[in-house]
Image (cartoon, rainbow, N blue to C red; front, side):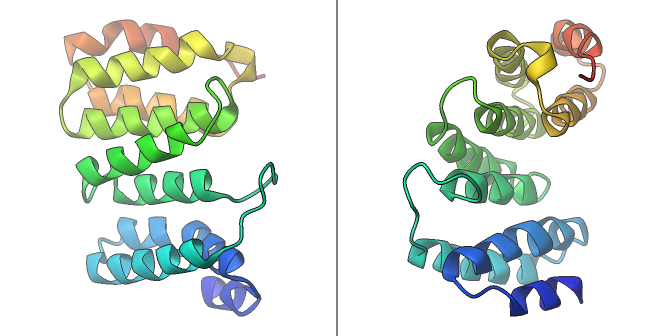
Length: 169
């Protein structure tokens, strides 16, 4: 109901894509409503493709859209999630908060595919590029989720140790 109410206020294709990405994709994925998730992804992509993006604009953009797609698809289709995360990474400046978020989601997609070495390398690349105090809370949470995704796999120990040292700022 809240997503429907928000959608009524989406007066541009960019806003419609944003509302769908923010309000519908992850809940539908969590409910395992794959048909509805697919429909909403298609509609959101159509809206995003029609959206007029302004270079340097702060706020919802193609990179964030791809990040939301990646997170929504993590459990359902980790290979596709990895592709969306990589697209998001490619649209962000290395070391930026958006880059760190996208790389961490890409790492989680690798972990979901049991490509532990790549997942760990991506997680560590975030910790190498972004000072601990500069990590956003959402990226810290994603890093902790990545460690959880890796479970007790021996290849994830070093990352787990590093993530355990990351403190809130």
